[in-house]
Amino acid sequence: MSIEINKNKCIGCGKCRDVCPGTLIALGEDRKAFIRYPRDCWGCTSCLKECPVYAISFFLGADMGGTGGRLHTEKEGDILKWITERPDGRVIVTEVDTRESNKY
Image (cartoon, rainbow, N blue to C red):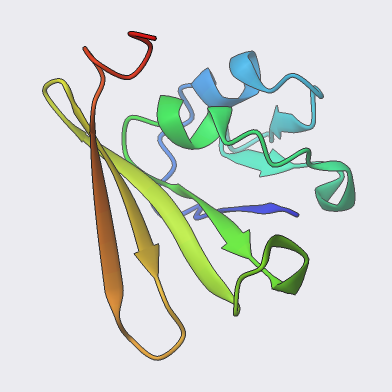
């Protein structure tokens, strides 16, 4: 499991670094985030949900039951969108109302 950080999108806010439970994300001299030990990523996706510019994606490899797609999030108000981009070009969007997500 691992994440990928798009340095072209990263604004260097450090939110991903602050929420990573494994302290795997750091900011370089250019203030861009990078993952220090990709193989140690737990796959918790905390960083995806915190990134305000959607610069982080999660690789959905065979170990996750995936086929090499990528997952990222986008937020619109109270709606958190989980966006899966499949290798064949299809995009699957799952919307979660964050007001209801921890209700039970």
